[in-house]
Image 1 (cartoon, rainbow, N blue to C red):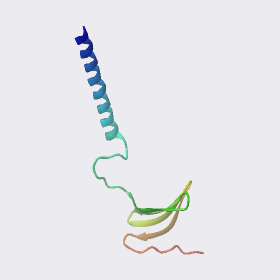
Image 2: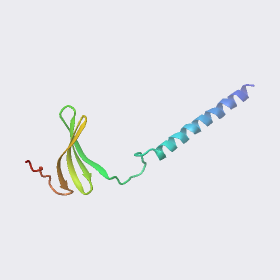
Image 3: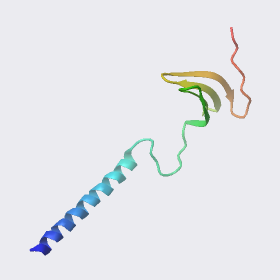
Image 4: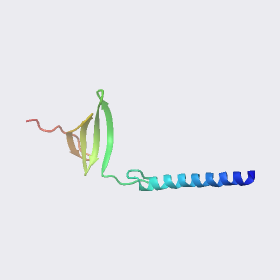
Length: 94
């Protein structure tokens, strides 16, 4: 009597553990943005530094260019742009 109960609990435990492992495996394979290996990305954050209470300055590489952007709550603004390997220059002020 007790043997069949423990056997049933053990089988159910294996079933639940197998379902959990299978679900996590499928979630990891199908979830966009999560990958185990290296993958080529279109946008790359080179560096980012805090700027003020909620702001941040970031250098982003995109399409053979480096962009210096200011990121704050609810706003992203491009400050400067340069080719990769070149120095930044400030945009012309009119």
